[in-house]
Amino acid sequence: MKIKLYPDLLKGPLEASVSGDALTINGEVFDFSGIPDGYRLPASAVTNRFFMEDSREFIERKGNTLYLTLKLPVEMDSPEEVRNPSEPIVIDARSGPVKFPDTSPSVPTLIESPEIIEGSENGGSEQA
Image 1: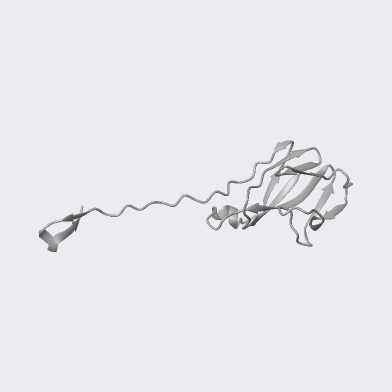
Image 2 (image 1 turned 180 degrees about the horizontal axis):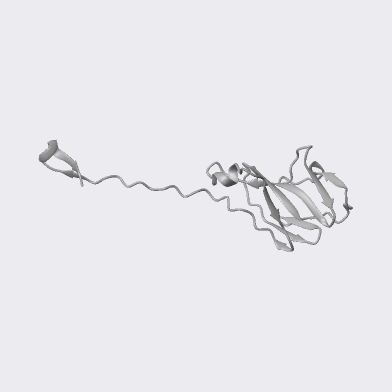
């Protein structure tokens, strides 16, 4: 299964796993075994907030591989390469849990303030 990810400012976790032609998202199972080779289903036909509602997105089978697009929950301070990737992020999901990119906010760099020493030279203050 090839899963293309579309970054979206969604709240809540996204956990998924694959078993054959079935994709489980946060405990809800979607069985796509009924889609024959060369056919596609509008993604908007799946009622789950992680599937794209865009009329240009489909769940389709090419050979033995299913292709679909999911929304990847990101935050305003998630890493830039996840929020705004230069190329679409595509996961080749096999059997088992799907490993999504880390969307945790970047840890800000702390800048230490210089220590101020009171004194009579230089008018009363100087940097340590």
